Length: 162
Image (cartoon, helix red, strand yellow):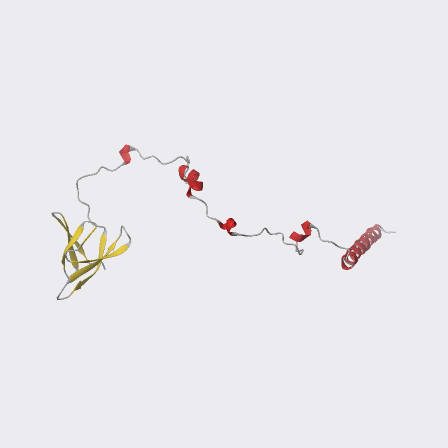
C-alpha cells in the first residue's frame, strides 16, 4: 500500500461518518421529536425573545439626571467646571452699545415710512415705523437706503445691506 492511499482512505471514512451523522440529525428533526429550547428562540424559533415595549421604555429623563454632566464638562481636560478669573471679565463702561441690526429694506409711502431690520442678537425680523422703538432704539428717520435710530441723545445710522 502506498502512503497516499492511507490518507485518502481515512478521509473517505471520516466523510462517510460525518454524512451519516448529518442524515441522522435531519431525520430526527423531520420526525417531530425536536423541541426548541429557549436558546433556539433567539435563532429564529417561534417564541418572542424581545422584551415588551411600552411608554416607560421611552420616558424622558429629568434634567436632574444630567447634573453630573453639567458639573463635570465632557470636553474639558480636567472635567472640572469652568471658573472665569476676574481679570478675564471685560470692564463695563458707560458707552452706549450700538444695535446689532442689519437694515433689510425700507418702505416709503405718502402716509408713512417704515424699515425692516434683521436682529443678529435675537435672530428675528424687526419692523418699525417712524416713532416706534425696539431694544431701546427709536426709529427717527427712514431714507431710501438708510435708517436713523436714536437712543437718548445718541443717533446711529444703518445703511441698507446688500
